[in-house]
Amino acid sequence: MRLQDPQKPKARITLVHLYPREMSIYGDLGNTHVLATRLRRHGYGVDLVDHHPGQKLPAGAHLVVGGGGQDSGQARVEADLEDNGPLLAALARDGVPMLMICGMYQLFGHDFTTVDGRRLPGLGILDVTTRGNTKRMVGPVALQTPFGDVVGYENHSGSTVLGPDQEPFGQVVAGFGNNGDDGTEGAVKGHVYGTYLHGPALPANPAFADALIKAAVDRVVSRGFEPEELDDTFADQARKRQVARLTAVRRRGLRERLLRR
Ligand code: GLN
Image (cartoon, rainbow, N blue to C red; front, side, top):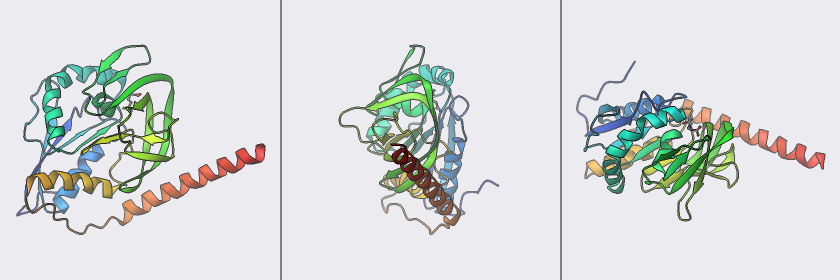
């Protein structure tokens, strides 16, 4: 059951979901549900706008989410991204929080070159570049981030490299992350987050979800974000279990490698 707006909302937040048809795989729609539901549980009203290619993006967006997609889905949103790119960049500069997963993370960078050499230009909001590979990076992920441990699931062929001053979203504890080499995962600039984490990302990581919500509400209401106490027992259990399992697997792998020497 979808939660209704509270009777007397503390404020109204416009949540924009970019390209829910073309770019929302591996359950990424769950991020939109988590943000809308947590906002309502914290006492805020939500106006949810699905943004489709060819439409005009609402200039009053307070929170923007985008998901992953096949390379073909990314190509289908290119023209719209070019049209709405300047507004998205202006919103990002203005401090509007955004969460971009996988394919949309790549398109928030400078560009994504597919495995067959096709270059899809990105918005350059994040200082990252991505190249497709024949080998995919697939599996569960655990990260250390400013919001504590964050868990999810990755599935991408694109290998992403951060620019010299680009902050990652987190450090890889288990999984491939941006490229399987440098231990970084995702990217963050201001309140714009790009990450490879599907899962979807937010249900098991409520501290991260609330950080996005806080950044959105703080811009809209002068009193700032006034959270309610939410029961995150199940989310916390799920996350801790995933971190413990992945850490144990990693330790076992290291021990086996040492014994083989
Ligand atoms: N097409 C991109 C890649 O494989 C994005 C995949 C995704 O969004 N899961 O790198």
